[in-house]
Length: 375
Image 1: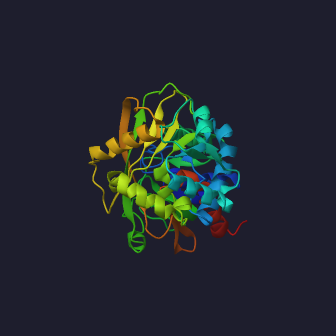
Image 2 (image 1 turned 90 degrees about the vertical axis):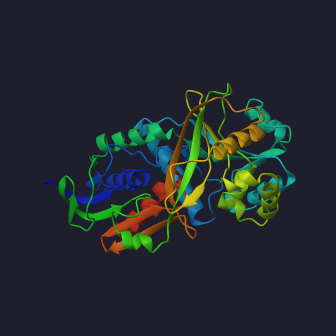
Image 3 (image 1 turned 180 degrees about the vertical axis):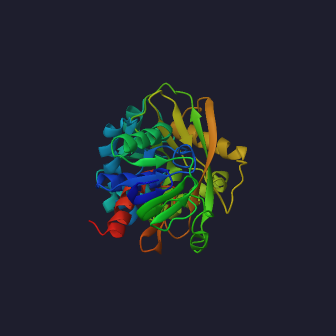
């Protein structure tokens, strides 16, 4: 192609974008190679919810805090709208309240609080079922509309940071200095491979060593409920799914209660997130089914259970379904992300816990610090 790059990034989802943007902001010459015309996978098929509260204690929580800060810095520059800020996680049982109280005693509870049922209803325009006891409030989260934010971030990265994007381009190799692609050879000194849940194209044997699987999720867009939400909403089920809560001893009693009362929700991996867009519509989900290759056939019961949990937590029937879709992402039993080193000047990065939007920039900074020998 005639141009020599400091870094080639393979993969144009949020993980690849985060590495490309981070390197370009450090003055590096960057090219990003993406096989599709635009990002069309997990990076746009989610809530756009940059979640800090509830992330796994320790590194994941710290990476999410840093990623939230980077998002907050970038969104005004890229013309991305922050749809809302903060999180309200409603609790319908004493067991759920106990988990929240225990969480607030940890360092992860900094800035968060337990609010009353009346305060929750006042903040949300009267939402909440008759059994609502209170809610966890966190000010830390921000939410963007993924289907719009990723293209806007890509455009800004190209126009303002000078990143070259080669879309509809397949990388056949990833060893510098000569990267073979379907558009010819790209010359770069270092490479970061961000394959998402493509376990076969590059470094198949190395990926296989991590025993990764895929998770298929179901999500919905619902009509405007006539209420403007002050932040994203979650419910009791999230307290037994997000590791920052679920690892606390107090979560065991809540999980036993929910398993007994809502067994099918657990079978479908359902927990509730409700996020609102500028047009008032709601992004609602989600379910989780795991397999080496989940089929495209999402059970209707998963959607039913998502809408059932919405009604339980919100205290109102769900509005009309406007859109529905499935997505897949890489998952692992023993980690939330992996960084592999196929060669001294190559890193492969895969987020394995469905937290790409929430941890991408923190991961990218850590990877590039090590790869490029910079702080």
